[in-house]
Amino acid sequence: MTVDSNSPTAVSAARAAAPEGDAGPASAPVITVIEPEAFAPVGRLGEWLFAEGVTLRMVRPWSGDAIPDFSEIGSGLVVLGGAMSAHDDADHPWLADLRGLLRRIVDERVPAVAICLGAQVAAEALGGDTACPSPHGPEGGVVELELTEAAGQDAVFSDIVDEAVRAAVRAGIPTRDGTRLPVIVSHDDGVVRLPEGTTLLASSPGSPVQAWRAGKLLALQHHPESTPARIEYWRARSAARALGVVEGEEAAEALPDADLPQEAVAAGARARVEAEKVEPVLQAFGRALARTLVRNARAYRTAAATTR
Image (cartoon, rainbow, N blue to C red; front, side, top):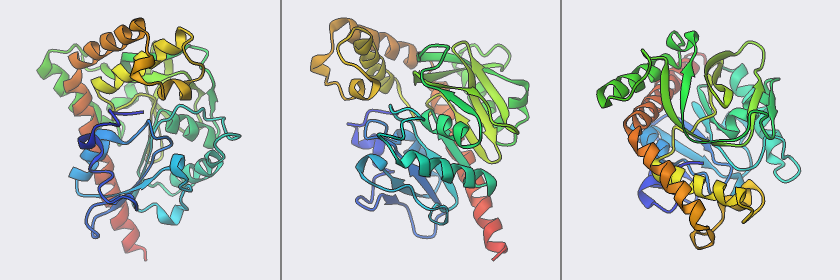
């Protein structure tokens, strides 16, 4: 799930070379982006990655693309969210291949970011557990990440946190001495047991496992690629589902605006207002995430080249 999929600006960088799905100069490091569904595009995270000078290779299982082999990934990987569950192999058989790819990514220490569904699939792939639905209930809107002590020293996460905290301070948004950060969430499922050997980086009141790291893979339950406009879209459809307008998260995501009850529209509007208040932090986190991933992808490519 991410920014407004109807906005050409939001996805232009990541989709610049359709139908192949690549964008960027041939000499740039390649980062593969796996986009599980049409309603969950890479959005502005794609723009921020592209601005850092990489080639984005888009893989879209929802349009029939196969999960690539490890040898085709390039120097980094992003796995986005989606309304399907991490256990939904019957309707989405590519999930098994994605689990295999994520295991190899961690084993080979390839820089990677897994978001929402991606984080849940990664946990399952590495021996953890995802509950569908979460026993803690759904989360939607703006919540505060509660950063662990490890977050401030983490080799992958700490620079991202530092930049987001600085943005919060400049904008007058409380961080409780750098231990809290506002983020956008939208999920029914959640990781309930981390794989062995991983590092917990953040929690929230409704999701004890919000951010964690395994090797060079950073897993995030929240949506750094999202915007206030997109959270309005999600919350309105979640509210419509709760009102019984439609059943199932995938069906709700496809619900047209005209079919939304006024109560659902109002819920979405409230969520957008809350997200707009913390937009400076959301952007700072996302830009720092893109910069960190690209820096690590360049280092991985250089190291790989020296071993050939």
